[in-house]
Length: 189
Image 1 (tube, helix red, strand yellow):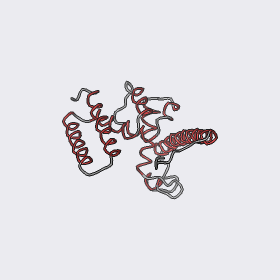
Image 2 (cartoon, helix red, strand yellow):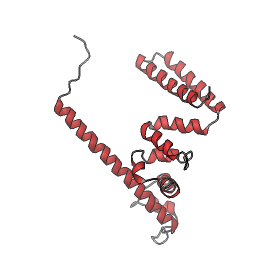
Image 3 (cartoon, helix red, strand yellow):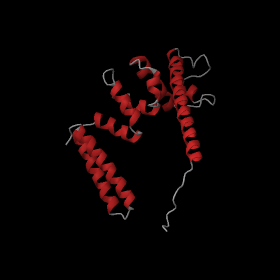
Image 4 (cartoon, helix red, strand yellow):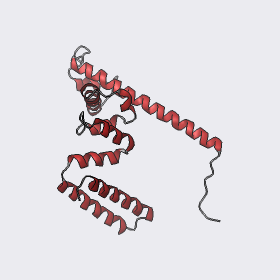
């Protein structure tokens, strides 16, 4: 008999896991809605400079207060996403929930009225790291991508010559090939 353990999952365990998964997805969507609402509220407060009426000298001081407890970066991200997608592009909030606030933030530099549907579809189906690559491919020139690809090739060489496991090597090759495919799709041979 093999030394590897075989995992046996009962129907009850699978059903329970599926129910928990559904609950996690619903909670994440609720959290994303809360982030969009928070972005709207922060935008509104910023528009009227409401932090003064609340006893704060700056918006940064307000968002960093113990009650609000947001980093300035998070505050800017939430306001920026609200401004871009809700006010400027007038995207239905429901379409934004499956994408998520961090992916929407990544897209703000490349999305416009003509490309918003395409980018939202990509963002809903790609991982964060793959979306970052997509955005990078769009915003960088061919020479920079060739430099990145050569650097990735060097990293790949390091994995093979460093005694890493076959699984590590497979992951590195897959990662490298995904980047090559992205370049080919965009015509950056």
